[in-house]
Length: 454
Image (cartoon, rainbow, N blue to C red; front, side, top):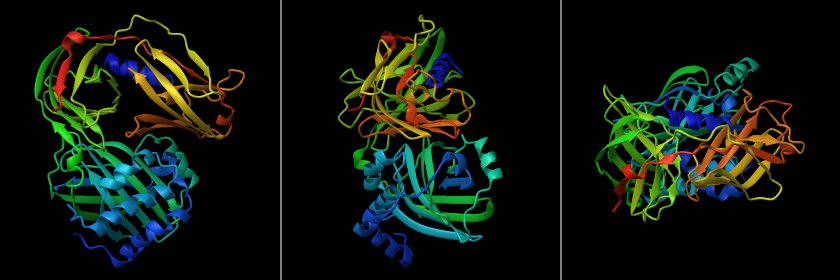
């Protein structure tokens, strides 16, 4: 782990396939019934891993889109978000409705039916909506609950592979629609994995709800709807970067601007992974860089993709600036703010701040909507929440606490969702928020790289 990673970790710690007639009839009625759909129980990460212990996705490579197919795809997404009102994907529903392709293929084995409802993908990400139905009530014992609580960091949507590649599971969620049915959505990264037009998509599950079986769905992937909305360049810009007494040999492989997510892909030509950088647009505004994983490692070097916000198809260029993360500021004083009157701004560093716009809470859940202004690395979920007397509502380091960050890629805001499984915790008493400033770092402007997007 390099110093930049350590800084972030420390900051975070502080804070034309024919569909069955029955499916067609169900989808035709979806839109008309949306206003009367009731909310359903969310399948939290605490128990979500039970849905699919192993899921393998192989791409060897499009669903013909007619008006009926497009409308069905839109209805599938609307149904999902209307039923799952607490979805972390809600902010992305417009783009998902627009670019999703209806699949509606169902396979069954061992009394369990799997339906791939719809799929959307660009060069960088794939979104899957699917349904799991059982002929028996889905029951989870206390023992299973305890087992899952020890591995709640694992994905509830299963593990994916694409051929010999292992894409990054960027996000996922599942929820109970009834005691017999589970709905799921997964967002996976296609970093450094090429999917061509009309490639066949094979989705295979081998273990679902603790049942061994064989569920394989084959369809094709159509990217024709989203292709006009994507701006992608391959600059192949080679540079030697000297940062913190380390030499990085890198190539800027690709920059892609897409409604499903913006990506910059950097190839490291030696064993040193380069991630000490910030991004600016052509107007000098900073672009939020989101954490991501290594997409591929060879004998020498690696290929890494980083998602970023705030750029769009009108952006003329982006500027990548290396940073020296060695800080001269030691033990920064905490910042405590009263949240009675929102918005509230927390200055995290001389170059950036976090603006908390809204906070909603009940006994065991806290939702904080915020946005970043300037250069800010850490998330709000690692903040400390206090009551009127300044006491911590729950210790920061608590294995019974879990937080997730939902990203709104349309308005570039974030929502930190903090959930406590501790019965003694009561987030409704939260009146103050404590955050620690980030360490200062130096921009190495003399080594900046301009990446033309036109």
